[in-house]
Image 1 (cartoon, rainbow, N blue to C red):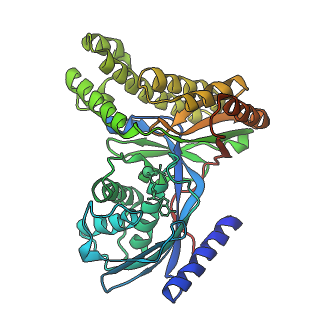
Image 2 (image 1 turned 90 degrees about the vertical axis):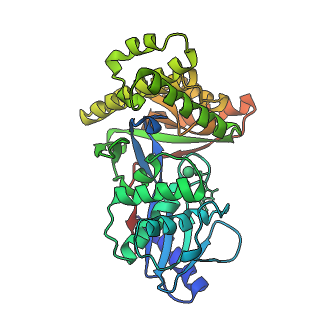
Image 3 (image 1 turned 30 degrees about the vertical axis):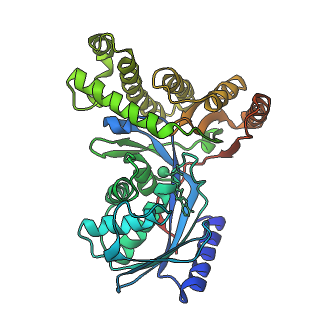
Length: 390
Ligand code: ADP
Ligand code: MG
């Protein structure tokens, strides 16, 4: 454990003791993530390839056996929120507490005897930046309860239950990628995940060892129409699958793409969505084989191809994200693309270490002259998934 994460665990444990009057049973951490490649493929049963950020949600937790659930976040103003495990009702809570409470609800719904807990948490994952602060929150609580109640659940099972918490209790129709990344990633690796059967493979992705860096550029914008647009894309993909007679677009082989597009006839909207999903799944497979053969630099152009596809075919980019990609590539980046659902949020930039200062400067200048808010740029080191830290 790094010095800073040991200090974070210490601080969260100390605050827990102030709030609840005794030391926590333990402290756990779960990271946010970025997706290297494989965007809008998860609800098409396809491939994704996230890696974990060094940024984590850290939770100090004690078990209780009296049915009481107490929740507190260092990052939200307000007193401890007290609930009862029997009273947890999906859709009843619009606050941040729905995420951890939803996990308790999902565990109990699945038959696990979780009889209460005291929780205090703090997170360094920026919220709402497309870096999955919500999954970090869910997974850290799921892992803590798994340990404290001896549930014996594996990472992918905790991810499934956390997804259920977010889908049903919080009411957000998210895929399985974020929670799986937070629960299962390993340091120095990206996670190749098949969202159909949840099979996964750790793919070496140790950029520092090869003189490269991956930057996350948080545009700090969120265009408000994003949820409705997300729903439309999902429906369009389902329509495409139905027209092609497959369960999901994942079942359209890349080699048959032209024939499939021809069969879609005049429906240009659906054709574009299908083309993105099928080529994107193919790009994930290409990135996997490049990384496994040690050809990391060759990943760059595939990131740009993926961005172009998201911009022109899937149409989920925005001027700020396009500006990151164009500026970074012009300034010498190996590749760049938007990451996450789109319409704002973050982009990633793959670059030689020596080019990072020039790229960062170019981004700042380009955003200033476009009149956009200054983006937050930080380096993302592929880091460990959820773990107990104390
Ligand atoms: P993302 O997961 O992309 O960051 P979401 O909208 O899915 O964005 O999740 C953000 C929400 O998660 C916040 O609005 C808040 O309710 C909750 N959240 C994230 N981090 C914290 C935190 N440190 N403390 C309390 N709630 C948090
Ligand atoms: Mg989220």
